[in-house]
Image (tube, rainbow, N blue to C red; front, side):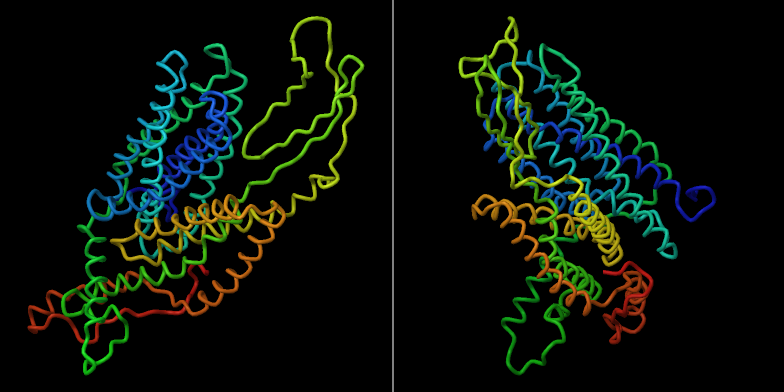
Length: 479
């Protein structure tokens, strides 16, 4: 019997899962913190190419969770999927770090190693994303639902703690530590690699305490076949045939009622997720820029300088004359005048309320989404629905790229557009959530537990009254 934390209802195994998540998020965000600078300064790519590769990598990290979910729920199970893909994750980090060593091959070799490393990292981090959260939820007994809800809060806190520390520490390692005659990108990428190794070791360390639910075959393939059969049967139905309450019920003659009920559960939640990418489109909108306007005194001559900054990159201001800049000699460079740009003549403290509100919204949104995705999914599709939740982030970033790159709007217009769209989504989602009825997946086991025995005893395939009870929300997480 697995132990508990200090005599509470929290299983001891979740400690290993939370620490693993902290180290993994440190690893991921620490690497991303210097990734754009690495492209620009080390690989000497231009800004457009660097930004495109960065966003492509970020999007891939949120599309690959569906792959990890399918592997976990259909073949390997969550535990082995996390271990195997974590190994891929570690190898990707190592390859990425080696690619940042100047003495290793030519620039083409550095680019090749970097791209191979990033692809492996994307498959590793994306593959384990839905599995770790669902695996943590699996450690709790059903009667400990409140404890499980609090676990998801602690789990998300570990995500933010790891990302916060890594985004502070990794850039310092890059700039303050010199190696190979310049900024030490190899160390900046190597430390996240080491943290990912720690994450893997910690997770394996708790292997004797985990509660593991075995995979139940190729569930997704069965789901697709069932949906396809139901659509085909409904399309070809005769006018004289009796109508069904739900279009999936047309598959009852070939597929079990339990599978059909599970598909209904998943589809209802996925439909509810359709408007949610707009939240991430607004939250992840970071395409703001600032303009610095000043005069420089150089040999009794005033030089005008206007520098544009983009907050997605870090910039160093180097002041120089038209004839060039020299670090030696008796000449000196001094900024003689600074002028505030009128458009940005606002104290930075005025932005604090916005950040507080956005952070509070993101915390409530994300934690609720994680717990809701777990609690409203059948046991054999926990990871799949977690992946569906993560896909909302991927589609949100795609919306940003389409609007930001394609529309060519001014920044303030973009912000107003996204805010207006999110307000509309809020109204739509509120209506959808009002009509959503909560489901207890454990009812599936109670309803269909004795199906085979009943069929053998009475010669029937299934009880005619089999149905899953749907209830209004009680004390569980509310939408």
